[in-house]
Amino acid sequence: MTLDNKKRVDNHLTKTDNKIPSFLTMAKAVGPLCNLNCSYCYYLTKTSLFPNSHSYKMKEDVLEAYIKNAIESSDASTVQFVWHGGEPTLLGINYYKKVIELQKKYSDDSVQCINIIQTNGVLLNESWCKFFKDEKFWVGLSMDGPAKLHNANRKDKVNGPTFKEVINAYTLLRDFGIDPDVLCTLNATTAKHPAEIYNFFRDLNVRWLQFLPIVQIRPDGTLSKESVLPSDLGYFLTKVFDMWVRNDVGKIDVQTFFETLMAYANGQSILCINAKYCGNVLVVEHDGGIYSCDHFVNEDHYLGNVVDTTLIEAFNSPFQTEFSEAKYNTLPEKCLNCKYLFACNGGCPKDRVHSLSGFQNKPIQPSNQPINLLGKQQLQTEQNKTVEIDVGELDTGNLDTGNLDTGKLNTGKLNILCEGYLTYYNHVDGYMKRMAQLAKNSKPIALIMDQVKYEDELIRRAKKTNQNRKGGNKNGKKIPSIRRVSAENRV
Image (tube, rainbow, N blue to C red):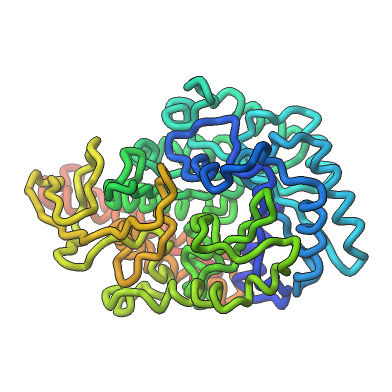
């Protein structure tokens, strides 16, 4: 996240020398507690990890140990504190005032502490927004598009809608001069409405937009009904990209497109999902426990406690190093031979459940029924032909009871979303190469919009010419030419 997204994009594309920390931490200061009951949430069931907890609030002594630890473990002049949950605003404003106090206690003029908070927005009011503004918090807001789509899955504890509160939070933040980064999940509902969702956020003047695919694999090996299907993912991303590349480059930064462009321009992505190695975002739970990753908060990936283990020790531990390198080292041959490996790197390891046997890159008709990931599954294609996909066996050992996230690395298997990502990369490849070339030539990548519009017009006029030839040009008039892209707008 960032308050100045354009500066972030420009800096990364031109490879500035600004040093970034080698790892970050995501603090769950309220543990898995939340005031909502989103149908696809994977973290609410983490209460089972803390059976003796009477309160999930990070105690002050643990909070102080964490902040001191994070500052002393940092190898950069900027220390980012990501406050996550659960819902972090449940702790109240005074809790974060204490956070600021402790950060000032353990830092000096050479260290800048940046606070980032990811919220559902329901509790935000003018007092919260004023606090965020005064203390320069970066705010991420979770919102799944317009009311009907948002309310389909993001409900409160009594199954009521939450859109009204969230859109009010967005408006308040903007009124206080804060441009929130918006996180929209791609689930079985939202992924079918790319234009509606993108136009909604564009009308709100959202500047940084993140689309997060929902993939939930149940202990019995089925994909939850809320999960996005690969074909829907590919459809959504390509449709949104087509709108973005023609109208909004430089106006709206879409994280997926930004990360892809980073790979084309610099050879590597920043986001852990697309990077060659992952594991550089540690999780600190409310009791001080350190874990490998937000999706691997379980006993198998416990690295110590901030009270007696430094974060840098946890990050550099042999276990975490092996966890990080396994993302690449366990890729199947299909991934290693893929032309888009440099941009995708197999996606998130938690989603690698697809056996290569029988894998076909064909669009699959969305279904309301859970997809069984154990053994062979018959699915209907868009042409109503039955195809059989062998997705192999899913190791469901050592799962938290009721947890939709396996919390285990699925080695040697393909990402369940591969078909969708492949559709996306095939579609954007040419555009990304041209934008990367624009950046290399120190030209604004927004120039791609003129190029694409020019090409669209050529195609439109070519179609019109063919129609006239088939039907006869009755008025005998010459079809006018269009202006060429000016020299300064060319790659």
